[in-house]
Image 1 (spheres, rainbow, N blue to C red):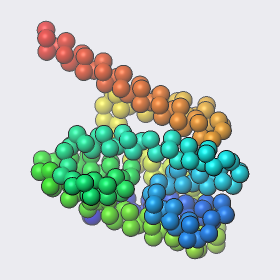
Image 2 (image 1 turned 60 degrees about the vertical axis):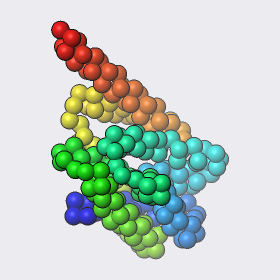
Image 3 (image 1 turned 30 degrees about the vertical axis):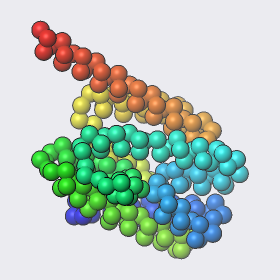
Image 4 (image 1 turned 120 degrees about the vertical axis):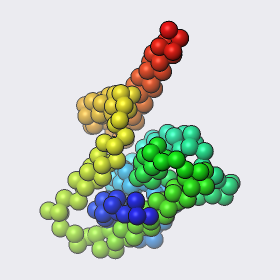
Length: 227
């Protein structure tokens, strides 16, 4: 829990903005809060709210949620390599609590510490619960009080800073760095595509670039061992 505390301040503007966007999209307060309880994903919640404001078809809103949250498949695959000790019930709970910050904290901690499966599982939930609770609290603040926050505070910029703080620590090898550079380079010119398709295309290209770089790096190591 102490490891998660430094990330909580970044949730304040992000959660408030998410709550504001839900209300501006016409959601009743209860529905807006349920969207955070059932789907803890600020990026897709804000994107879906903007599509609702633009009167986009429901199928496009659902598709946008799905595309933006594809990254959780990658996070799940990454965590599975650490062999956490889940029961069927705790596995479902762990999936529900999985967010960018929880994955980053857990992955980096597992990489630098020798832990048992039980200790890794305890660390995961120890970071996940306070972040989940913080998100519910700050989205509720945005839903109830967000309308009176001055626009000059520019809270939306804090969202960018939040994700940058998660990105930098994992750029520790060439495949990860290449994946970030490729996805970023493609995302900028495709920013104006409708329905957030630029995010989907850039993410897919970044993942493919990272996989290719990892493949050639592993192949190079095999050649060295063989020689």
